[in-house]
Image (cartoon, rainbow, N blue to C red):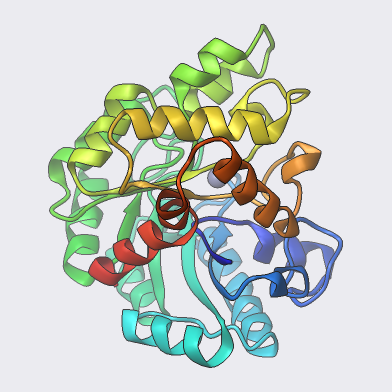
Length: 318
Ligand SMILES: [Zn+2]
C-alpha cells in the first residue's frame, strides 16, 4: 500500500534518545515502514515552548543536521519540490519533507524564514501550545495573530512555505484563513465534536478539545482547499482506553461528513504522543486501512485518505 503521513516527531525523539531513524523501538522507523510500496513522511523538528530567541534557532540547527544525516543514511531523499518527490518515490519508494513545529524558531527575525526556506523547510506550524512572536497557541490566553505573525504568513505565501494551523488558538486560526492566499494545513488534528461525544470526564479533556478542530473550522479548511491530517494520539481520538481504530474511524467519518473527501489525510503524530496499542507503530497502518475498507470506506476513498489527498496537496503547494 501507499502511505503519506503529515506529521511525526521521530527526528527530535531519535536525537534526544541517541537512536537511529533506520531502526528503533519507538513508533516509527524505516525498517518497519518497508511494508509500504510508496511512503512519504513529513518529519517535524519540534521547538519546545521553553526555547525562545537564539536558543530556539540553535535547537533547530542541531536537529536539522541530525535530520539530514539520518535521511541520507536511510536513503530517504529530503524533497523540497514536487518533481523531487515523484523522483524519490520512483527510485527509493520513500521520500521525506521537512517541517518545523513552532514559529518560535524564527526568534522574531524575518530573515530566519528565508534561511529555513533555503535549508528546505516547506511547512511551518505557526505556534506550539504557548504564545510566541507570531501569535497564540491553544494553551495560551489566546488572541489574534500578531503583526509579526501576519508578516511571516505573507512571506510564507510568497516563498512557498505551507502554514500549519495545528496547535494554533482559534482566533489566530481564523486570522490565518482570512489572510493566507494559499491553502492551509492542519497536519495533526482530530474532531472536537467526536471527542465531545466519546470522551467521558477527565482533566485532559480540556487540552484535547482545544487541540481539536470544531465543525466550522473543518468546513473552513475544506472551503480553502486545505488538508487535515488525522492524529492518532489516544487522548485526542477519545478516551485513551477506547479502541483506537474504532475511534479513528469515527473521526474520519465525521470529517468526511463536513465535506472532507479531498481534505482528509493522515497526520499520525508518531513519537509525539501516547497512542492506543492498535495504532502505536507504523506497521499497524495496513491493518488500519483494512479496517477503513471493512467499515464501508470505499477503495478509492481509502487511497485518497492514506496517500492521494496529501500528494495532490503537495503537487500544488511545493
Ligand atoms: Zn504537535
